[in-house]
Length: 592
Image (cartoon, rainbow, N blue to C red; front, side):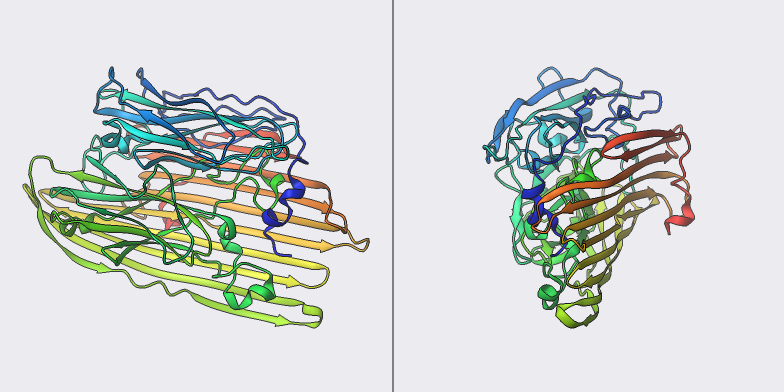
């Protein structure tokens, strides 16, 4: 039996999760002095959703609030449409726009569900829901800074809030939710989380002037194979100065646990999924590959062992963080007034990925057309290396390892002839990926150990156009370690012990060794043991413990900002909450 417990055992576990329901505060808790939005402290003993994630900062001015949907009931397998109009009493431009949604679910039996809110075919929010239990009714809030979508929000749009949810006599969890946009008028204090001047030399007040979603129908696009694409033909403005592509790629069904998969020739032997334990997003323009993006190893609240994620979900589980790709060096080719096709696919897609992508375009509105040239597109084809060292024994036993690794360096470069001179932009990325899986499989044991590393190092260099050369370096990391140990005991019963470690981290600054910039670190760890009888009837679980340590630090723009919180869980309840005053994320040497 492979480790994909969700598909094999979820029907057994659903409805058997028992805990004490305690209310969770959903009010916005702002620390105006530091510009950070500190979440409410979980209560000791709390068994409802408990997260240390920093919320989006809100300026200390009165917002105009637009309701997108209110007290909607998600109990059907269909999107709930809504209409949107910009706030008449709060015209743009806005200093900041924040999407805020509050959700709750009754106690009962229900799967984790994908949740997303689209407006004008752009994804304002994408995440999943927590699972309820017989006595825990989850309550949670999600927020996202959507200021970069201001050009889209300036016009009336259709939208949809979607949580595909089946409710019947077996699956009784009904989800309710309300979603809002908070518009903060320009002239107020800037957002404490925005980066200010970018490597492109733009002022911190600069916003994308055009938004081009690749999706349609106000929903994600479902990609079942590597050949399928999310694609859109676009005729771009002729005066573009910068292009970003924002991507969310959510693994689903057979690919939900893609990091447990193995090369196709070992699927039966290792009782696993195929196409190897490597996935990557591929970006193409007019049929040519121009960039890659990593796939985050998210684990949803029903993943592997649902008790692992009560009360603290995995990294970004309830609110995915999109990945942005800088396509600015291509502006000189895309601004020729002709239609161009931008497409996104998933390498090794095995069925399936749910994908959203949106292009954010900046323009120089003082000129009608900008000339230039693309000077370099060096994006090698993906060619991961697979190494297998497996030994077969009597009775179908197997032991050994399977490793898949990939190292790819890409470079885009180009220049634009702007009114104040020639501006050159080069984006260099170094993708490093490795997934090592070790197995021990025999008549009484299925043991799988996964050590995944995934990192992207990016250097963006902008020079010319009458400005001092600017250089921005950033690191994105999302390693994952999973140990899954299923043992059949002497009396025929089964014990399944799972431990998971996730650690998402990012850092952005002017140089690798600089102590200026911003950095985030989010570590989640959990362990639990499930017990089943010889017929795989659920008997209970034991030994649940876990923690989340979340750190955010920023230096170099006004007063330094620091937030550190650790939540410790035991027996599916909060046992300690520790707030720290010292950050240590921006020590340059260890980010190399």
